Image (tube, rainbow, N blue to C red; front, side):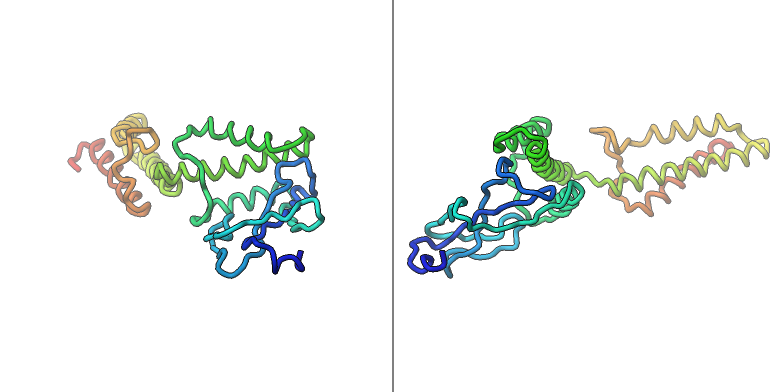
Length: 242
């Protein structure tokens, strides 16, 4: 290979990659043979930082080194399923990554298509070969769901902060209700009825078409806003104007 490279007409050379997934290699699995660019002439390509692309700007002929000649890249890729999931989560969190999926395809159809696609690349149905194909489909599915999250503007941290703030405010009202009862104030049922009515009057952040009006408020200010609401409830229950 080295002797012929100087006179070879190609400018870019792709080498077969021998993957080891779940600790072993199987030539019936979807990944064999796969190829990676590992050599190119100056000006024929360039290294890029995009995850899973690595080389871009390819110009001229690309030559695939035959996978049956013994020359290959040995890639000890994933020891086990745990490492596959860990890498999947890490790689799909990178903003600069290859994600070529059509985001208009319904998620359910997309998941089924990816499973069928990687199984079709396999040459047997042994447990190992099927497991490798399913893990590869899982990567695509996780990647696609994260793209959907970004498109839909989902922010679980903010949503959780709102839920926690509402729960804290409700617990605060429960404590106040006990004090009011001890002081011959309104009974607990009246307090909780008022709390429920007030919360139901607010937009529910988790129902489509009913976004909360305060979801753009930072969590620490959401808590203050909710406590203000609860004080208003208490004032009404005591017959005072808020």
